Amino acid sequence: MSIKTIAVLGAGLMGSGIAQVAAQNGFQVHLVDLTFELIEKGLHRARRSLQRLEKAGKIPAGSTETVLSRIQGFIDLEAAAEDADLVIEAVPENLELKKNIFRRLDVVCRPEVILATNTSELSITAIGAATQRPDKVIGMHWFNPPPVMRLIEIVIGRNTSPETVATIEDISQRLGKETVRVKDAQGFVTSRVLAAHMIECMRVLEEGVASIEDIDKAVKLGLNYPMGPFELADYVGLDTMLFVAENLTEAYGDRFRPPQVLRKLVEAGHLGVKSGKGFYDYTKN
Ligand SMILES: CCCCCCC[C@H](O)CC(=O)SCCNC(=O)CCNC(=O)[C@H](O)C(C)(C)COP(=O)([O-])OP(=O)([O-])OC[C@H]1O[C@@H](n2cnc3c(N)ncnc32)[C@H](O)[C@@H]1OP(=O)([O-])[O-]
Ligand SMILES: NC(=O)c1ccc[n+]([C@@H]2O[C@H](COP(=O)([O-])OP(=O)(O)OC[C@H]3O[C@@H](n4cnc5c(N)ncnc54)[C@H](O)[C@@H]3O)[C@@H](O)[C@H]2O)c1
Image (cartoon, rainbow, N blue to C red; front, side, top):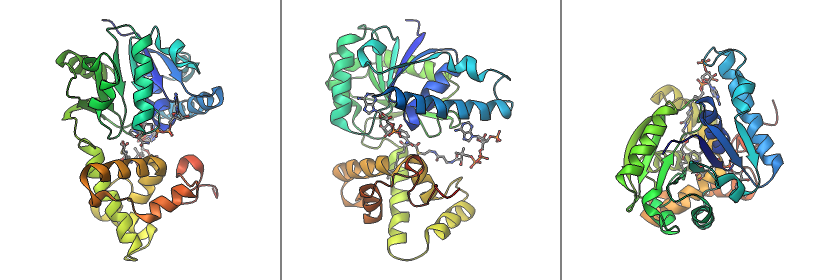
């Protein structure tokens, strides 16, 4: 099947970036969120990113608006998905929410359409089982920021077919990304490994070993990571971090137990860069 139109569900940090990358590579995009304000916010993020790429000479001069014109906003999931050739879901990290959305997609999408999820760690098999097409349900795990990060982690559910894997590998390549194949184990490779690192850094903080700033500096300069753990946590979103840590704890036990410092920030509504405050305060500059 030739893929021309991609429906992207969720216009948040990831959905807006995924929509941008798809549009940059010539696909028509149907971008869905709960309100047009949220879609506008996502398009604004994509516009800023495209302008940055344009300024750096990574996309042709003057192409920002052409790319954005390929993205159409929808608040009606069914209307956005009914003529899509591929769906990529990027709504919040909640299994029941994702299963419910996949159930609805299964009714409205043509039988041959692949339904991919950008979940950070949830079970692809469980999401697939909410549909009558588990062979066409797959994990397509992108990284933040999607326009810059080079990998898509392809997660193969128990019933995902080899044809679906091959199609998604091909599409990922057309989107300019490298891929790895991963079995459907909670947290896959990347989220499980990253969570272990970030949660340990929060424990180091809670034990008073060093300050937020010095832990970030130590990890960046001493270990050569591009971002310190607290900068990265704020960038990923602390709500997402907490959802992931809770789900990994359910799967693997106490070693992923969310630190109190993370839980309290989320309870206070401090979700990181996207809300203006997290481990750091972004409202000051
Ligand atoms: C407990 C639970 C844990 C698990 C959580 C879930 C994890 C999740 O599922 C997976 C993830 O995403 S994990 C997270 C995975 N993510 C990570 O781990 C990210 C780690 N961080 C990094 O890799 C780097 O800090 C960045 C690439 C973000 C920025 O780079 P930098 O050097 O610090 O700063 P710079 O100099 O400003 O930018 C450099 C170049 O990039 C360009 N650019 C940047 N943003 C852009 C955008 N939005 N658009 C377009 N372009 C953008 C910029 O123009 C520049 O281009 P130039 O041509 O060279 O001038
Ligand atoms: N933030 C990251 O670094 C990152 C990286 C890789 C994967 N992920 C995963 O991607 C998914 C989205 O994460 P995010 O960071 O973009 O979250 P986000 O909170 O920035 O965005 C989620 C968006 O989904 C919208 N939404 C909620 N319910 C919806 C519905 N029923 N229909 C359509 N839209 C709906 C929300 O309004 C919001 O705009 C999660 O599964 C997360 O684990 C996140």
